[in-house]
Image (cartoon, rainbow, N blue to C red; front, side, top):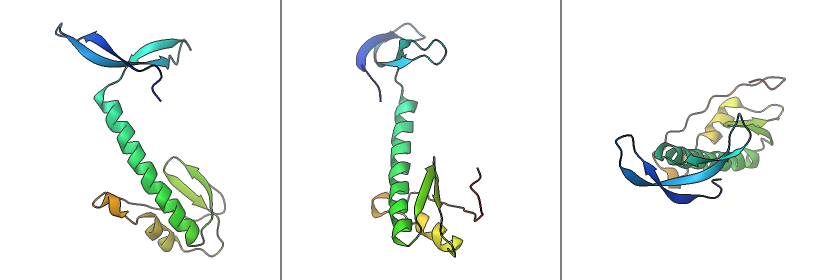
Length: 118
């Protein structure tokens, strides 16, 4: 979310004035709203995280449909509680590449235990 996004003029390190995207953000130290510059790396990160989230959402549906109830997700992890489940099957379900993401590298490694751990 980039509130109050707008095009502004910004001076480059070499002195040229160029259009830039600026938005409002809360400073982590002062807790006050301030202008912040949007940049290409932030845009690339947004796209990457969105694609990975969509791939994981499809994996969540697959594992649920296979009888592994999803009880928790933590960032890029899917946590399921199922007595007698098969870890290799679970990992295989998580690493199916959706048709719309052909060629996208997907890997998963899991573990089984009595309690969740990070």
